[in-house]
Length: 226
Image 1 (tube, one colour):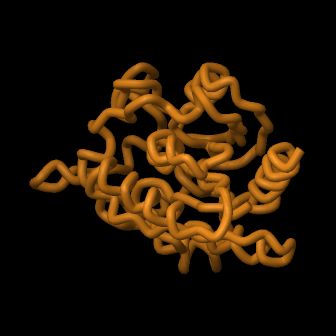
Image 2 (cartoon, rainbow, N blue to C red):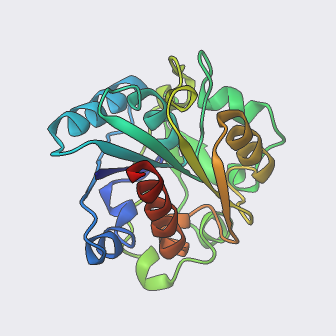
């Protein structure tokens, strides 16, 4: 089975730079998407294209906003399962922003600014780092490249029929997350009927706990193989 990794808002394929080598060591074929993050719908189509080009059935893995992408893209016939990594898992007709608005503001919200066109700009200050990724080693943080400016549309465009309603899913919950509230993660995982595991990390799970991410992927692959 082929693993397709989908980054969160502000991210890139480098968001998975700590996970990809570990998957390769285990002989797990994987591709990391590099989405422009200007439209949820456009990002979904890019991931669907990757799925179509894969040489096997696919396990989708999404971090943060990437969870919204895999929730829609996961309806592709070749997708066997979904892994959410501290990720949004919207229901039909629901947007990321609607989920965010359903809970008290997360601490990291104070570190985000809006551009003249409503785009979201990530703060690279030490204070923002402390909220978003306090447990990521400095050398990884400096090369992670997760500072892409994102359009507001990725948060306001709504999801179609959620793939988690028809495919098995797993959820890796970040229990010390200051970006996506922990209670929101628990609620979405429960709604999706996901198999839940936990990591005591910041929101930047793929860099802070890559072994935990790989463990969930391996669990999902083993379960689907059976």
